[in-house]
Length: 198
Image (tube, rainbow, N blue to C red; front, side, top):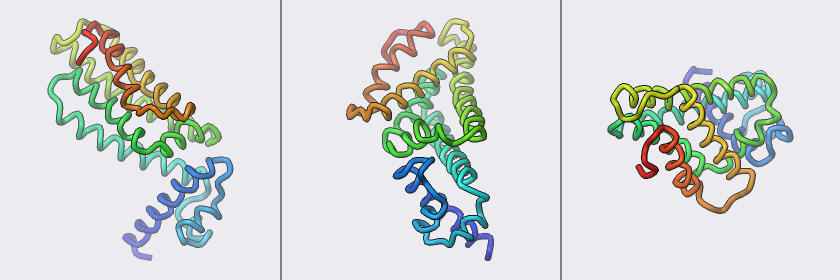
């Protein structure tokens, strides 16, 4: 199999796995289901991934990579460090708002994903919180905000958004997620000494 064809098949398996995990949850999904939906033999799935957890981790990494790219684009379009930190969080909210099944998969269903998944999820959360921290640090340097513990603030900002998304998914809240973020944003701004409105 050529490298290009192998990559196409791998992506097809991941696309199918996303559908299967979203429909059945991590625990009830089976490699057989993923093979059926991807129109690949079970052996073909195992050629690319050693098991269900590896597929799930690959999906998590692919999702994080795509989200990272969107965040970088949103940040580049903004002026000012606080606006850039806000753009990063808004992008997370908008992405999950448009893909509720994806949000449910990674925020709720993944609880059965095992130790390796939880370790990787913690790394990704830290990475995204660090993006916010970096822009809060720059905001201090630029005099946009008074000196604060930017690492704690960055984790708090990202953690608050993470919690809002998780509750939105758990409650099957019909209110748009961006409305919840609009209510949260002034609180985040006030936490670093800014007026509530952007």
